Length: 261
Image (cartoon, rainbow, N blue to C red):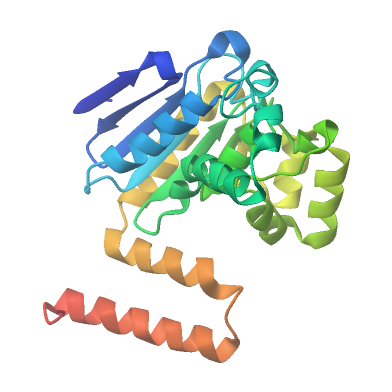
């Protein structure tokens, strides 16, 4: 892949590069299985602001043996902004605002103009699982393992993953996954609808490249409209969804004919 531009932020534990309409974001703390820190979240949000407008696909991956082992517990138990004790001392409003800042590192992956793909191998635990859930699609290596492990710390998932999890697997299964914190192997993830595809580890990069090429072969504006239609479908009635389809198709027809505003 020819890199048109790159931004390496190794100190933050995240780097990104762009090749044409594709941006690849890599978590790069392999010595700790890409355990996440506030510095990484800050850099992920920075990347979201720096992405050029011609980027259509974002691929998210982890360097080394795992996608991400979740929150770096040494940080959570330390004295910084993400330390659990520090957060507990804030007012409820301040604490919620601080968490909103953390969430911003994850939720931009749902941006309507982007198609986001998580390439998952090894562990994707807690914040790692939620990072993958915020992506539109998830391609898993056969050694991938998901776990919503926040409950083991007496916490709740709070990084934008609960709605997508419930949409994918239903309320009862989402509840079971979250309250047990158990590990979900790649084959079960496929059965539950958490994985777009599961492939042998050696084929992960190729599978992601094939999916990316298929997305890029489609009209970009049509893809954005389709994503918006499907993303909002669960919250609309049938009549509302029919109307949304009509309006989206009208925009496409006018754009294709050159008569759009």
